Image 1 (cartoon, one colour):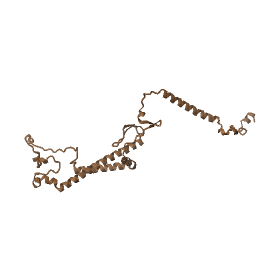
Image 2: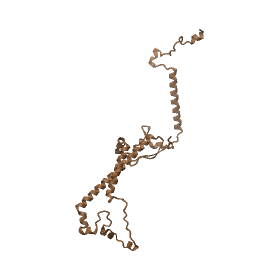
Image 3: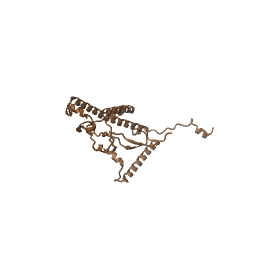
Image 4: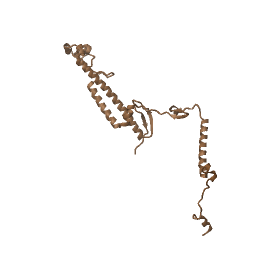
Length: 253
């Protein structure tokens, strides 16, 4: 066995032991090795370069320059903090959105829409404000008949009652009972009260249906945000409408 090979044998080599901290210097802490020095030096240089870059950026900054992020941040205790924008939702909407699924909300909205249509068909919107005017067309043979046309005579009622949409009695009914007597009768008062209650119920259902529609739109927009990544905000969210996003088109394989 050659001398060079004998020196290269692992069994003959001694384990390398780093120098430990002398006893009289133990109060100074762990003795720093070269690997510890390298880590400390790299960290020091990285921080120094960062500070130099920030210092240079601050010196070269234009004081009149505007950033759009300035409008969404504010200074608190010397630190810039992003303003947290509260969502434009009511407490009732937020509660429904957290507890109910979109299918349930849509089902309730469709149910309300059917009830609204049924109420409209029963009431015919007689006293509703801003309703479209009904058209009743009469066909005549000659121009002379058109010129001499009398609407009250055609409807067989008094001229004062022509503009009434409902409760328009005929002349035969007026001979038996006066209009004043009809309006003051208990039956007409009861019917008017019931009609007013029906209109109040109709308005409540219309408002409820609108709210359910807004809630379903907001839930659907949040589900779309979870599925799709690339988006552009077109319209902000409000109490009466959901936010509108424009998503990047992707071709499905």
